[in-house]
Image (cartoon, rainbow, N blue to C red; front, side, top):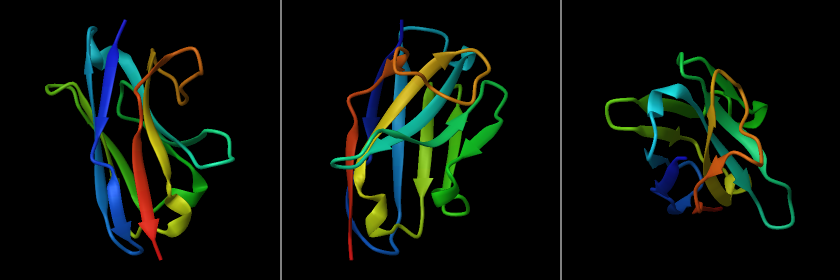
Length: 121
């Protein structure tokens, strides 16, 4: 069992940057694949970025070159650095965790409550 708490969301102008953080507790963080997903109003939740226990990463095409996922196992924290933000990035961003070496987080895995990111034009 793992608990996840996201932070770092907010309102930013287009072209700006934000860094999201997700702190995990309750289990051995380094064993988990960690991911960021997002859900915009009226849309399904979609993958943004995932990082495996071996620091391999996967990104959605729409964020490649703009977003960077990283993890700090000593702090039980995963980050999402978001640069060159666009209004289309507006969504609730969720942190997820899945045990093992995976490039996705499933709906039945562990999820945080989400943090709102709003990008104004």
